[in-house]
Image (cartoon, rainbow, N blue to C red; front, side, top):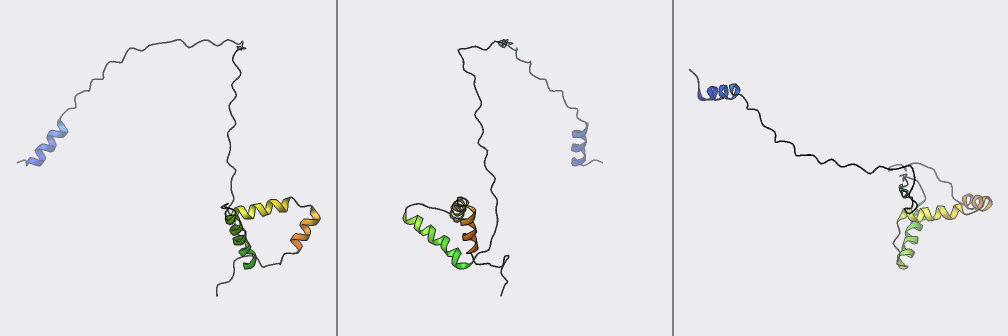
Length: 126
């Protein structure tokens, strides 16, 4: 005795799949590509590929500085906002580095020598 479910499943498994006919391929149009000769045409300038502008990689870092010096960044940003120029902290620091790079060795030594020495690393939690 077969149930409806088993009879239906047997019918599915025993049924043969009919082959599917593929449509006939469309006629291909063959065109010949123009043959390039070794002689360059003087009327056409040589096309040069423009150089790609590769983005400079950025580095993410952390640093330690005294709170009063850190507040100077906000002061510089406020001055820039008054001049209707929005700047980020990283831009302020980069501008400062650019100015330091323009100093000679003696001036740089004097500026860096006047900085307060601080302990590096993360502050202790209280």
